[in-house]
Amino acid sequence: MDAPAPTLDVVTVGSAIVDVLAHVDDALVATHGLAKGTMTLVDLARSAAIYESMPPGVEVSGGSAANTAAGVASLGGAAAFVGKVRDDALGDIFAHDLRSTGVVYTTPRGTSGPPTARSLILVTPDAERTMNTYLGVAGELAAGDVDEALVASARITYVEGYLVGLPSAEGALTAAAGAAHRAGRRVALTLSDPFWVQLQRDAFTELLPSVDVLLGNESEALEMTGETDVEAALMALTKTCPVVALTRGAAGAVASDGKDTVSVPAEPVTSVKDTTGAGDLFAAGFLLGLARERPLADCLRLGALAAAEVISHTGARPQTSLAALAAARGLAL
Image (tube, rainbow, N blue to C red; front, top):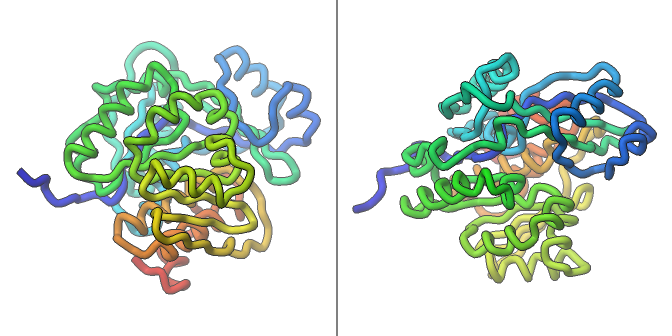
């Protein structure tokens, strides 16, 4: 029996996190022994210590996959998010902020245990971001929290790489991917972070054969494959994943479906304020393009456009209608 026609473009699965962003100098990053430009998981005590040393910041709802869902909605797509918060103040903030973007969010809240997740993001003068994430209840997302009917209703199910290798999230990841494939939909994955790829390489390697669309940046792809240049890494990854798209910072982005390889330049940005969310928003544009069956070049351009908007201001979600920007570039969906 054929699955019903999809009603969503993209459903994303990941950690529901409230971000606290502050502009700091390199010395503060070094003082805490952090690797600049990476994500580190911290416990509640470590999170509190870093927070105490931060200057006043901006509190915004985030989480990689949730940011991508918000980007899809801003582009005019139909999106949903699966991720867990507690019944606490930060959980209220997260749910309100995400739903206000037009994203469907129905995951039941936790009523006991750890609080809602938060990520302390240190933005240095070069606009690089160093993330210190306390997962809290977000790390307890389980198979039972995944609405399989919701997943089956989306053309593409997108999973953030930060879930890969987390024993607590394995059931949720398996449930989401299984529901998507049983409905004949595609599963997409992002590599998320080069340090995380290094830590969880075996888990990523085991998962990749079930991935239809793989996204990442140049550093993550090189780390994953062991290659020394992005072209070789792209070729290696397309042997396993049917579609691969890689961002290259100021050099733009490149994608391949195993037959054709297409690249686009980066969208011009007057001033780079904060790179937080660049990969998340690139994923939004690229995946919505795929969901709407646009050519690879258009998918890349949509991704580059969304990424350029988000790095032009502080915070990981769009502040300008991406649909309007896309229409102005001849990319209306």
